[in-house]
Length: 112
Length: 114
Image 1: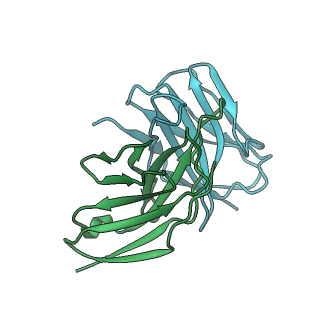
Image 2: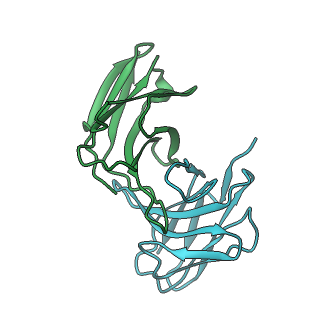
């Protein structure tokens, strides 16, 4: 899997939007951009994914740069329940298994 | 509600014993996975299955075994041959293996072997 780079940590106030950046300058044309989040001692939770176009779902939005070398996960109104480690992952079709390879992620703190 | 269940949440075993971790999904997903997560680290793929009665080794399959007799179930056995079995084990499923499919995870089983 191609490498991604994320800030180690970010802080946000509750009810404010949060923009979590991810750099993936070596992305290939067939890599999908996936975002997951994980709370301590819990299984990862799928957030959103996309290939080329921006994506929206009930949890978040994913903004993908035109050259696809970076992307941003947008939480429109952060709540305390959004405090977690967020992982940006590139996934390609290897022909065997499209496993998830987690990096260090961004630890998001949300304060009142 | 559809989802993935793993049991038990915590498991304690003595060294030299085999132990089986349960994973069940009612999402009607074809693909299922087992990952291992160690403190402060990412996920490592143990085994995966694309379809019933078929499974493949992942990156760290040594000391583990699986079966896929039913679409809904993918149990993992940690054998006594696994040198460092203490870890957080996560089961996941997806519609298929392709990278365009998201994976859904269970709550995990924390195994402690002493």
